[in-house]
Image (tube, rainbow, N blue to C red; front, side, top):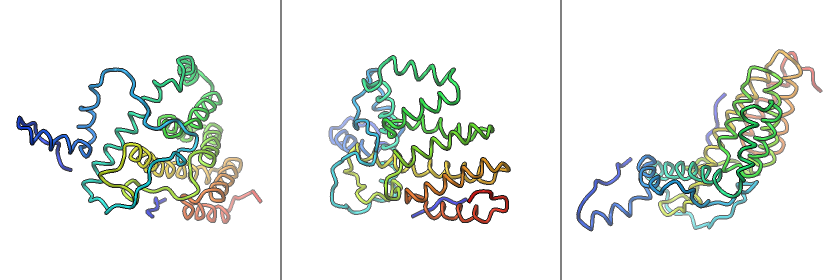
Amino acid sequence: MDEDEDDSFPPKKSQNLQSKREAKSETRLQPESTLQLQTNGRGQKPGKLKLEPHALWYEIEHPSAAPPASPNTETITHLHARGKYLLQAEAENYVSSNHLSSSDRQFLSTIMSSGTQSDKLSALTLSVSSSPLHCQKQLDALMNMARKKSRNDAVQAIAALKDLLIGNLLPNRKLVYFGKQISLSSKSTDEELILWTFEDWLKGWYFQVLQAIEGLSTDSLPFVRNHMISYIFELLRDKPEQEQLLLRLLVNKLVYPYRKCG
């Protein structure tokens, strides 16, 4: 299954004032490793969230500017590196923020360490639905559940993922890769970089979900196959992302020789 496709080093230290000013002006475009060295020295206090939690990340408002000239590949690479760093920091700050109480964090930790499969699915789904942008780790945990050898566990996990994809994760448009964002420029705000980095990540993550669905859609058990066919249809009906791939999967299942669904 194929996914569809719709660096300079940081400046050296210098003792003259002009070099310092130039280095400061280039900080925004430095690679991720350099940005981490500069930012992680702020002590251990959690930082303030740049984006407030939102159940529908694609509805978060941010200033829209006129499309600038397309940045070159090097600039895109640096901006994406910064976006990844900012998104990771945003998720860490969310965990430490007052949006999650200490009792909530302890409860989730207990559930994930000793809860049943159903408990874990419920906890992860609830967490993601509150603010998907701040919950990449939880989404990855759900993805790992969908890859379990136990058919029943995998089907339950994919059912939860399907509901999240339709209800919270996918907008009513196709997702856009980071480098294809029309407003991307060296003047893009941190908030924009976070949103576009998450969207880019989500596009690749969703493709992995579809790979898991495709694998189970050829299972020997009709129960498993029929659930996957139903999920493919719902995703194709409700969201445009990966519609060509979903259509191909659905057509393939319609001629599957062991199909027992009407």
